[in-house]
Image (cartoon, rainbow, N blue to C red; front, side):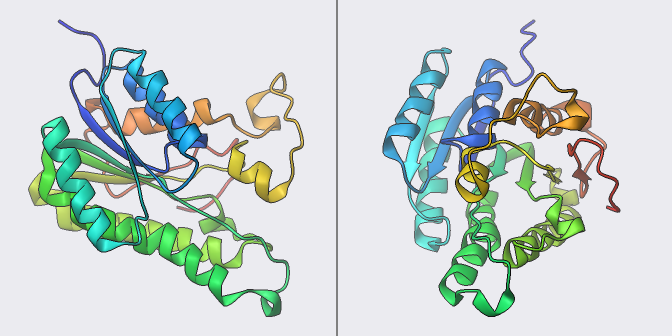
Length: 250
């Protein structure tokens, strides 16, 4: 009997060319899954991620596009389902943020792009993928500790992450009779290319204990793995909080 936790499973991940998404993709591939990745930019990074997955002996398909485009989502869901014989796990991880410390300085274009990417695109992709989900499939959405704490520089981003929590809980209720579990992960501070780009390239001291530093993407990825396996069979409509000990309600 194969001991790999996701052997033969088909996984579609948005925003998996770097950061948390890439670590999830590599961990899932190591556990036997075949991977499809949706990315919006950086062809070189995406090809590199694909090659790392292929080197593990798994199938990997990468698709470039915008999850805010309904036609793209529908075409991609159909294409990936045909290539991977259905979809067992959908991970909605695409996201963006534009820090601003004064609401009067918020740019409308940035607010709309944040909502389009973080929540509208998530809903559109999930809608497109749902008909292709295999029996017992699961959906995992990336939210954030900011949905509960707020963040003085990320007003619109925090709002989208709160919407992700509500979307997760509502879809879980709707999906029970279909035997599809829907959950979310709300990381605290994590060292990723996006956070470095947004807040600077301060080097993290990974020798510190977990509760005294930002998480690594690999530490967060294991939470997604748990939610994708039968070990979490009784968990749906929930949010898990790998946040280094931040006490929040939810």
